[in-house]
Length: 141
Length: 83
Image (tube, rainbow over all chains, first blue to last red; front, side, top):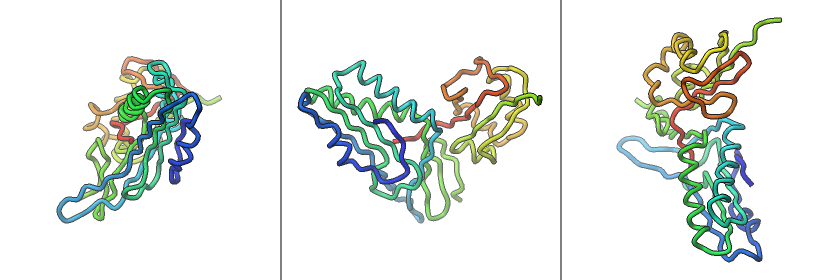
């Protein structure tokens, strides 16, 4: 499953869906929103937006790249958009493989590729404005 | 029949700098490099971002020399920051 959602990601359901008798490993990567504190103000939450359906298609392409490189029998990538509060999951990657090596490698590959090619953007919403991550453009004083 | 235009979408910081999320350009078939001056003229706030921007035409990454025709959808993409 490769999809973009605007609500809480059910990681447990994604892992359950990846369990197969021919696989001895399921690698799960969950990216969660991290809050950096700095003087005088703090990040209240992150807000994500995506260019759809291009972003959906790019997630599928990453899945196809993984299938070409590793013996991955099940791959799911789910990215959340909209408001994501501190500590919540913004992305979940689940890879099932007969052995652990490929499962670990493929999930690492997926998150690195997401950060390179998937048209999704996040902004940090602070108490005094916001900043687009990567562009460092926003409304903070 | 009216001439079809090029639809331009702006995302993230580019939408902020453009002051809009969507724009229509009346242009003959051109290239991404060819329509940039039109975008810049209409949305001067984009100029300082130029070197950081990527573009997509009809949902796929495209380069400056790639063709853009009336009816196409162009997306202006700042550095992605998913994950």
